[in-house]
Length: 299
Image 1 (cartoon, rainbow, N blue to C red):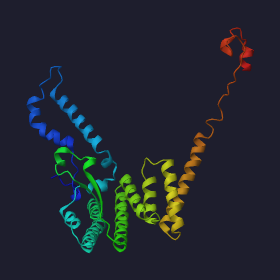
Image 2: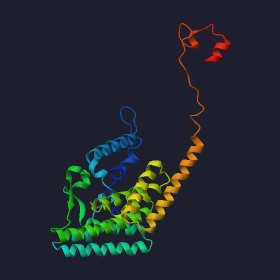
Image 3: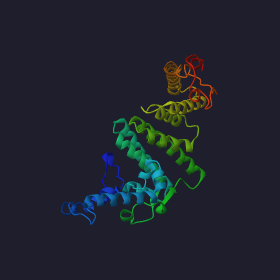
């Protein structure tokens, strides 16, 4: 099994670390050994590790493209495994709801790592990845072995309940991730919310903040955030947080444009315009060796 991180989250396998751990007893003895070309063993080992990682990456490109919370569902806690296997919808929903409440309690106690883990666990009772290869720890994670499971109910009533539950979990997860400045994963959580309900004001609001709050955010991110806030304000004009953030962002964009105009507005106004002149055999000043100073000034 793999180590548990702060908050109880199961670490994803690090194949470079595993390969090194297997080789470490040999490195002490063999580090000075060289191949026929004079390459130290440690260099050969690093090259082998890089090659292995490249091979693994090419076989799991789809998995690597998934949001982090979705990837983590591949490594479930025993509690989640038990709920997934239950044949009772009510039992699954009740168990997942309990995990979500534990996440809420962790959030209010400022235990954000635990809160993130609990929300991800609650979601993964219904939506998760499953590895069909029981020998994946030695062979690695491969796209061909991964199955996506959406156990969201068998009838309209159950599906509506699960959708409402997941919407709440993704919203809470996005809020905690934003507080932890994990902007990219917060955006992913908001996107999942909006897949369920394209008019989810909370998701639009949190995604906008996740777009413009990072120090690296620029004009593109600010415009995307502005679009989200405008849409959220149309859906719920009475939402004070949305209105305030929309006003502040508009003012920030206005100030930035004014500063840019001052800094760069005259940059292209004072340039020199060059005209093609055929004053000599070669054309232009370079082609006329007998050009006078007066003629040169007239160009």
